Each structure stands twice: as structure tokens, then as C-alpha cells.
Length: 217
Image (cartoon, rainbow, N blue to C red):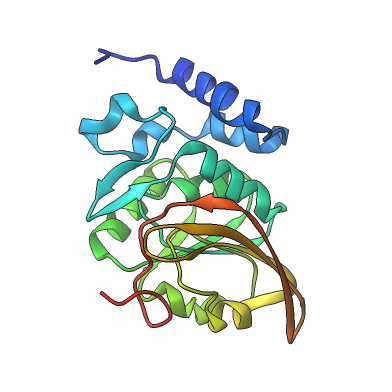
């Protein structure tokens, strides 16, 4: 195990080897991954592994996703500066930080109160203005709807009808859809008030999303 690792060097290697080499080339996105200190979002006992090519536990049975998956989902969202984004599943706050670094307005909902508190404190300490609440993310967050983009960071059995309702026409969402054990990463575009189209980006594995339109506890 490394002692006193050079996190800047490790972050550069992560961006170069795990993200750029896999086809993520948007310079703003790569810069965001360089600017956000991923090691701040993992448990202290996992800090030496923060930039490795796999997910890590963050407590309460939840995980911080593999860096490439975070990059892939963020790229698929096609965010623009000023976009209002709903994130379902705050977790450690890392995905929210990446989105905030890209100049978006992030509204994130988390089921587990302790994670929501920790993420809010950490994001605020790092200067990221993210609005977080505790609740059932499968129901979206009507208070701040509609959203330009929605990103879901846990496995859902289907696309929640409330996410579709809260997404603007012309908006996009990225959701892992499938069973509790394996999913497909699905991109959904809302082309009219009553019609969506979708495509899949490949297989993935996320922790299950719990809630009214998710999996049961």
C-alpha cells in the first residue's frame, strides 16, 4: 500500500488511462475529472485505491462508481452549462461534483440521511453548490422540476414515469435499467410530451435503487 500518494499524478493517470483511452475525449469533461479530487469522496481506509479502475464502498452498502462509468454516463448526458440536473442517488457526492464542475445546477436526492449529510458537507467544503434532499428518488423531485437532464446512479427495474414527467421536452436521462444484479445503461430522450426514444450503451452493475418505482427494501 502506498504511503503519501501523489493524488495529482494518480488523477492524471486515471484520466489518461481509464477515461481518455476508452474513447472519452470531450476536453471539458476530462478537465472536470482532473479538477475534482476523487480521493476526497471515498472512505479513509480506501483512499489509496481512489483512482483505481473499479468501484469502491462509501458506507451504508453504497458505492462510488468506477471512474470510467461516471465519465461515460456524464458524457451521455450531453450537459450544457446552466443545465438543471436531477441526480437520483447522491451517494458520496462525486457524480454531483463532476456535474457541478461542468457548470450545471445539480439537485440531488438521496434515500439514506447519513450519506446525504456527509455529501452535502463535503461538497460545500469543496465549493460545489449542490442542493441535496433526503427522499425517494424514484419519485423524482417535483419541487424543482422540470429538469434539462436526469441521471440515476443506482439500478432501476424500469424508467420511473415521474422522471419522464419531470424531464423537459428535448431533455435526456441516463439510467441503469435491469435486475438487481445486472443492468443495461439506457439513454432516454424526451422527444415530445408523450413520446420518448431510447438506446443502450452496454452492460453495467449498480447497487439497487430502492423506492416506489424501484426495488423493495
